[in-house]
Image 1 (tube, rainbow, N blue to C red):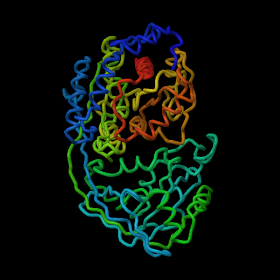
Image 2: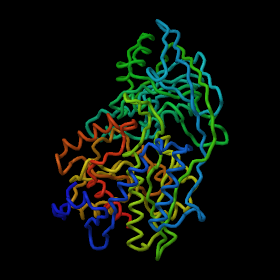
Image 3: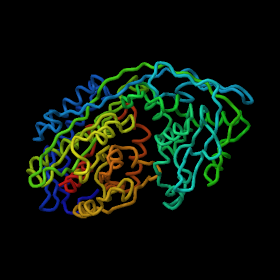
Image 4: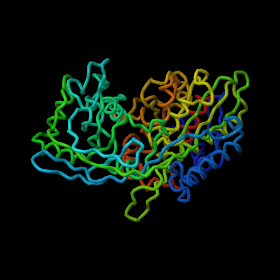
Length: 522
């Protein structure tokens, strides 16, 4: 992430100055505060914020801090004089029994957390799946425009479907194929797979976990799918969804298939081919869940810098403030998922950008700064805003999303997540050219990152949304160092108690990203 136009002395100053101006073109010189970036990241990820779970005491501290910093930055409250938009949520904490499998060569018992996780979207105190026939439906995709239907010729109403993660061609070396090769489509996302299973009438749906196509380990499934789970407070109580949704470890799935006289690897290979047909396993699943239910509004925080000449046209900046709250304890007993990088850093960046834009004076269009809730629960806060916008989406001309700033250091390249989906490429190319950066392809398109953050909620509503960040070609250490940093983060910190503030972080990459976001937004 090199400063092609900056001296080494300027680079060194970037790492220590309390308020640093990053050199860009004369028309866009942001006064970005490194002190704001560090201070807010450290505050939001402190133990006293308890991991920033929605509807908790940690939320109250979080949203009040963001509103306070928005006001200090010079923004105006954007929701009829309020900094907040209420997002009605239902919180459910499930206590599942073991998942019991009968009808095969031997009965199987899969334990919660170690062999499987199970939850329900249905808002009711008790949910039971009893003697439900099990059907393997491959990748669980129904895509008529691609000539693909894993549910063709099978009735899964009241049954339990077992589904593979990602798309059928995720192992392709390139981007050509029925499902875009190794670049995940939305059909590969776990959210889609549960949605389609419900549309097909399945009573239960379990995804088979595998680290490579999921892009995270079983530890992430454990931390994300246990404890309190959040959903929109729907008037129908989500009774149109499957009774039970969850994940199986790869080992549990192999044992399940073996007990049915079949082989998981063999059927998985068959499921990659067009024309695959679902396979009944001749076994039955039983599991019940007792749910603790709490309905309570969470909050999006929203501020605005009104425009001068076109105040009724809007450019929106988004970042999610929430994280997982308390999660699986590490070996030291620490059970707070602090979410320093994910996404205290992005929220701090949102505030730093607001400060810089306000210092520069009012732009032509209005700039909206939106810190959303419940991203970790399925992009709920941004989805709610997209369906209940404060400012008309038809007049929201563009947006920039920040989720996990780069703390690996400065780099020589820049990546647009999801490729050219945003329609903002020309702006992005000009901005990174001013910084001497090369535009590189997304390094891990199979991870489906485009569908995993808040820009997606607004993109689905037709707003051009950019989600882009520095790449892995680090100034210090090159691509090898960048890839090693990313791998270490995914393995040792992502969605775990070790995602904590580190005073030794190199902030030069994060400052670079913010300078680029500033230029594009301005």
